[in-house]
Image 1: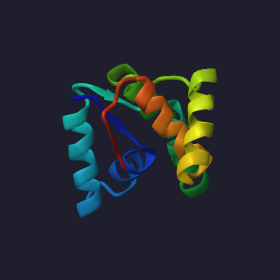
Image 2: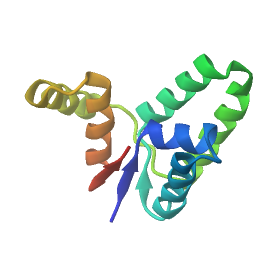
Image 3: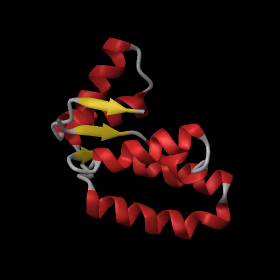
Image 4: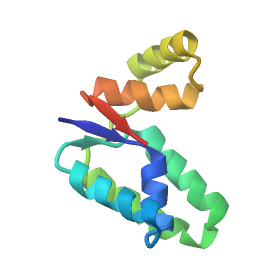
Length: 115
């Protein structure tokens, strides 16, 4: 089953690798990489978190994003995703940027979003 990974999973795996959450996040990533989606929005949120919390790690985070992009589908935010996200946000009260992640994951065939 194809799953999508949200930025929270990436953040815990990279920034808290020795905590229980970080270890679970790393395990989720390793198991999901067989067939997973990491929406570009999630990658951007990961970079923004890094830029804000650990600016000295930004270059390493950019390299990690490149690595993730070779291992997972990284669907772009296109017009169809934008329209679907707007509908989701309106219908379900989601934050728009969260709806972008959901819509991109759905368009790429993900059946679950891991966050």
